[in-house]
Image 1 (spheres, rainbow, N blue to C red):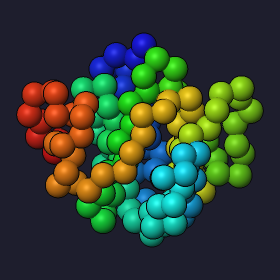
Image 2 (cartoon, one colour):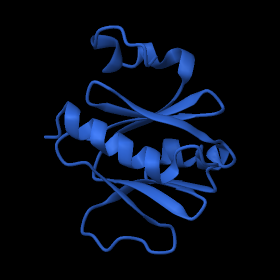
Image 3 (tube, helix red, strand yellow):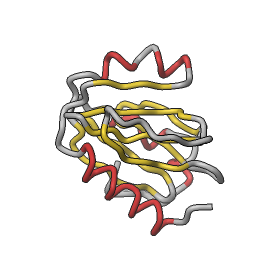
Length: 132
């Protein structure tokens, strides 16, 4: 299971890949998120940070994409036109300026308004964070 330092390093890699860039395309495996994918296009990734073992991809429209890798989740960065050859199941892909950040095999993924993050069931159990 990934621990805090591994999640922080993964967040840094996602930040380097798509941070400060506008989202050109978003894809989600889960229907409730897939309905919202088009609404992410045009939003800028302002920051990628962590809150405990959770990763938050913060957007310019005051939303955050929450994810927790659980036991099997893996994040991969790649060129948008060169998807990865993997046996893992793709759950999220965000593409910005020809660069993609993909999340495989994790199922704890949700989109939140920034002001409501502290109400998330996992985040609310952690001590207060300046990340909220």
